[in-house]
Amino acid sequence: MKQRFSVFSLLRGGLSRQLGWQPQWRKAEPKASYDAIIIGGGGHGLGTAYYLASEHGLTNIAVVEKGWIGGGNTGRNTTIIRSNYLFNESSALYDHSVKLWESLSQVLNYNVMFSPRGVMMLAHTVHDIQVAKRHIHANRCNGVDNEWLEPEQAQEFCPPLNISRNIRYPVLGAALQRRGGTARHDAVAWGYARAASDLGVDIIENCEVTAIRRDAAGAIAGIDTTRGAIATKKVGVVAAGNTSVVMQMAGVKLPLESYPLQALVSEPVKPAFPCVVMSNTIHAYISQSDKGELVIGAGTDAYTSYTQRGALHINMHTLDAICELFPMFRRMRMMRNWGGIVDVTPDRSPIIAKTPVRGLYVNCGWGTGGFKATPGSANVFAHTIAHDEPHPINAPFTIERFRDGFLIDEAAAAAVAH
Amino acid sequence: MLILDCPYCGKRPEIEFAYAGQAHLVRPRDPATLDDTAWGQYLYMRTNTKGIHAERWRHARGCGRFFNALRDTTTDTFTAFYPIGTQPPAAGGSGA
Image 1: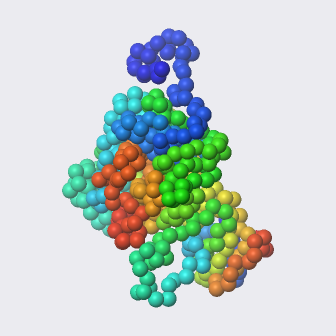
Image 2: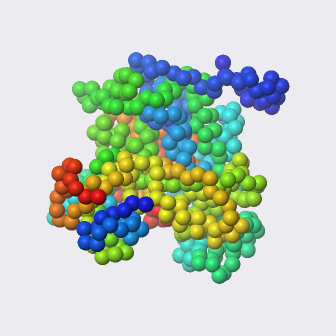
Image 3: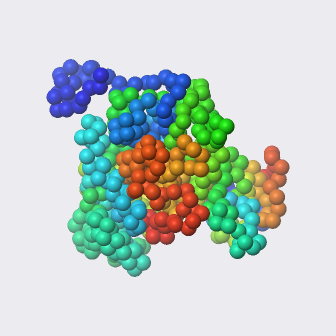
């Protein structure tokens, strides 16, 4: 049924004036019941469905999405991929993801445009240098590549970088993860949707969950949606910024707060920027997409919100930093900006776990950095749902850690300034 | 950018203020008597309301004082501002 992509199929497509392409996944109608339902059709949710079907043999499953797939944070982020996190638990999780990214296009037979062009994180203060070097050593102990660059080396790696000593926050060095990079955000959602759909997974768009039903014993019995009731014994919630709202339907309270996180893109220009540069201290994240747009990420807004928009002064602050670090972009025009709603945990590490409700699983709390984790998160979450117990990689990422004190405190470790 | 109506200084732009999270969280009087679940609830669990949210703000670059506000998190519209130590006005209360 599915058209496979190859040099020859592209060539054939070209010769037939690109008229022979078919939809890449089925538009499914909800059935009366499924073995498992994933709530949330972003990259993490679609990926979870794909791995449930491909690795665990669960094919009578559905992904329900209130809007269109990939229309939430999957389509609203700056597509940065890296795994240079401080703690063992985090680097295991994120590096699992990077390894899956490396072969994802081949595995899905769909070009997700993974581009390991290098992620360079700048240091502007003595504290930044110490933190960066601590990360580098911790990463190398965990087999994650990360290396220290002096300012001149940083400029050599990224020629547009201004390493003048006379700017407000001079560049004192940088940590470089060469295996890091970017991927095409839509392609990740579409690639997983296509592969999952082909294995029999129903992808149901425009289907908002309105209630989660539980049986007399308290276990999951099904969900009510805007397109009718669906029976199931297993529900995986992967609803990003709306996780608190969905989980409330099952009476589960989570340590989450939802904040707007903004990003913006410039008009497209010729290739000018070779890598990804992040500056946590002055909140600027920048890379150039294959279309030529500069993709720029800002920090979160100050307050919790569900509006998918934020205040302009946050973007202006980021652009101040970009213009100082990369003076050649001072006359670049910005084309559009937007916000996504990110669910943030107190320790800035995700929750990928079973819940107190039998049959209910949650994958949330990715905060400002969920895109990079898409394949790894989906892979271990599928394992958690299929086996009713976590994969060793996500075992530490429980809800109970906020009761027991076993935090994975990337917030204090400041892999990113939050 | 939001415009906040500080009960002490009047309407000012958001950049003068610091957000201080969910309002009306009461610190347990005797934390040592709590079990881990109750203490974890106090420290970390938040309502994360989609709708009218009671929250604290501080006029950090103005009078420096804390106050409470009600804001609809689906529109970012404030419905009330009221002093610390008082209960939120009834729904539909005045404000900006």
